Amino acid sequence: AGRACLELGAGCGLVGLSLAQVGAGPIFLTDSNQQALDNLDHNLALNRHLHGETKRGSGATVASAYLDWGDHGASWRPPTSASASADDTPEIDVILGSDITYDEDVIPDLVKTIRTFLCRGQGRQ
Image 1: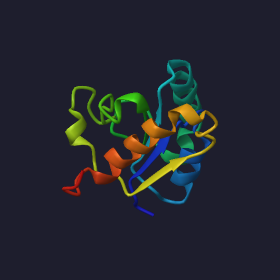
Image 2: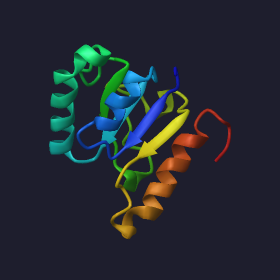
Image 3: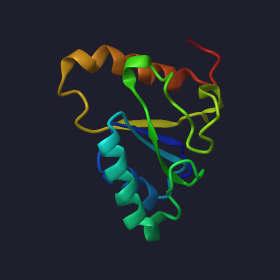
């Protein structure tokens, strides 16, 4: 409970909604596919009674955000401010992903992205 969570390849948002139910937060649900993000936002809005406000960019407990693993976190913009820099990312306690390694070509970028987020705020590279 109370842990900052980042989900990679969030898809429909089931994992993030489940995290909200057990008291995690803030929860950042990310994807690089705009259709997936649109669907994710729709699902979060339908289930806001479970976790509160969810609009992208609102700073809500559960928020969606675009993230492309190929740039190792450079595309990340914290949902609390669309104009904030990637350096404004809160320290992430937990990184989750489900069914995200089906394409082995993405694994090197995935690993670099995970490392980027785990090292933020830690003074490590």
